[in-house]
Image 1 (cartoon, rainbow, N blue to C red):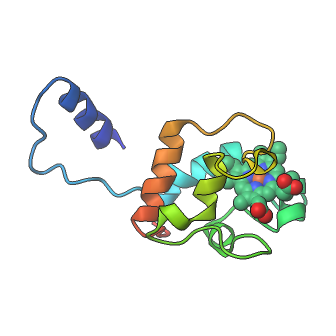
Image 2 (image 1 turned 90 degrees about the vertical axis):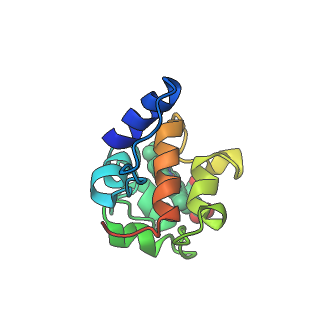
Length: 124
Ligand code: HEC
């Protein structure tokens, strides 16, 4: 992440990006899991109402990839058809926007999740 932020600053300042700066892979453990932990697991952990209602356990990579009782929420490599993205962007019905009844994820968090799915939704 740090490299990306520095590059964005460089772009704003009109400085050319150095050639070594290939896009940094998004890490599940470092980038994605902390977002889920803070914003989702209060409800999406075994015993909590989000999990009990939907079967969606967001405390682990396995749970995230397994999806809800209706099936997967993530299509690796394809954020456009991943239902998770539809929900966190609020493109689904208002009553289904996630986090449920709380503030939307920041655009930065949503970008990270979208990028991580695009890069194959790996357990990295
Ligand atoms: C305040 C509690 C709460 C929080 C926080 C929360 N959820 Fe949920 N979630 C629920 C409940 C309750 C349901 C069951 C569906 C319903 O009745 O709306 C649900 C259902 C879902 C579903 C299934 C929807 C479907 O179509 O079956 C997904 C996907 C989901 N949540 C993702 C998330 C994600 C991602 C986050 C964090 C960004 C999150 N939720 C945060 C309570 C929560």
